[in-house]
Figure 1 (tube, rainbow, N blue to C red):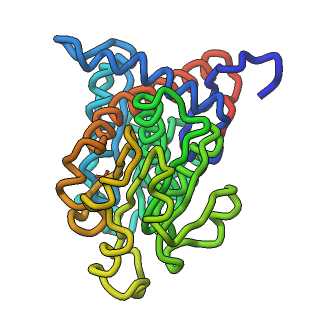
Figure 2 (cartoon, rainbow, N blue to C red):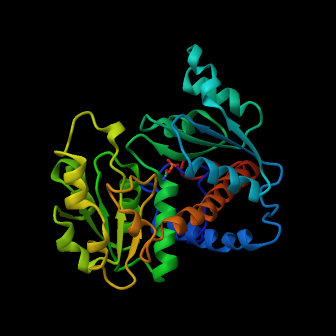
Length: 326
Ligand code: CP
């Protein structure tokens, strides 16, 4: 960004990952989400910000939270929403992802929200489409809106992110959520401790300057936030720890561990939960848990992302300039 441009101007027509964003851009999304959150408390939960725009949701992997909150976020901004049923797509007849996406775009779509099992699939589409592309999770790579909503929730509850100690616990190796959190949290000045069995902590974690620990009990008393990740059995080619029971014993958040948390420590989980594995029911539903607050905040964060990327594309088309972040 040139120094002549306003520090907090958003010029990206895509959101592909938090790796790409500066601390100022992340803060701008969080501030925009904070303004838009108020829409959810109105009697008529709708603003006309994206009236006349069309947003298509293309989810090649299952989703409860992300898919539905993107659809609802688009509706709250008065956009038209196309939810593509991937089980009936012509990809099953051999059509490529690129051709499928280009055909959907040809129906007048302004923004494509895409989740795909292959890392880099949204990046490929961003290169060959004119519409905005938002990454709703690509393989093990990134889940930027989950990272943003996690950071939004921390900032909302604690008033800041800088200087806080955030533990990310569990299956780091297979987690796009961990990667997006690591990018976002470290850019905003949090101290990140990555915790889990050595087999689930990949060497790239060191590149973020994160602390690595295999001792959850040892680090708990100094944490401001404990973000527990789901054990992703579907992404593990071989058993990376002896048993689920042993994992829960050493790395699960249970009542005994929760009793040793600092006052005000947040317990987070991106969902879906494996109750009794990463977290016991009494902690998931207990006083430290902000898990449903994360889901609620996801709506405001996705409204902010859709609004910012679509507006940047509109401005780029009007001025004839290619927006940044392409
Ligand atoms: N956290 C998350 O991405 O949940 P879904 O898979 O339900 O979207």
